[in-house]
Length: 115
Ligand SMILES: [Cu+2]
Image (tube, rainbow, N blue to C red):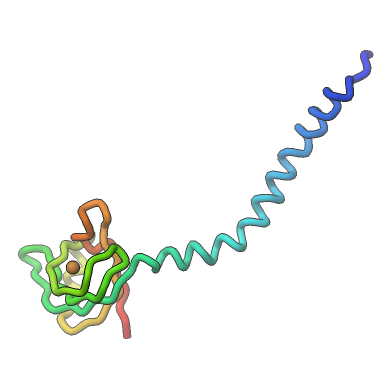
């Protein structure tokens, strides 16, 4: 049997070690990544006060503060991603909400009630 050249030996060793290293790398990153992901999930949300729900038009009118997407405070009608939300939202309710960048932030993508 031919002896492996030093180069072939190194390549062989790296090939064996690579999957193990990838696994270690993955587990090391799993924990620190969990936190930024949670922060990012709420970083795009702004404050809103429900002024009116219009089920015919499928909109909710919100008086909102300055939004992360650059929209200044104003009162405006939003479309909603899920029209079932129109049954849950009530005038006077305070929410935190995120809008859809795809239509220029005119649709509520998700929201949560603020107590
Ligand atoms: Cu607005």
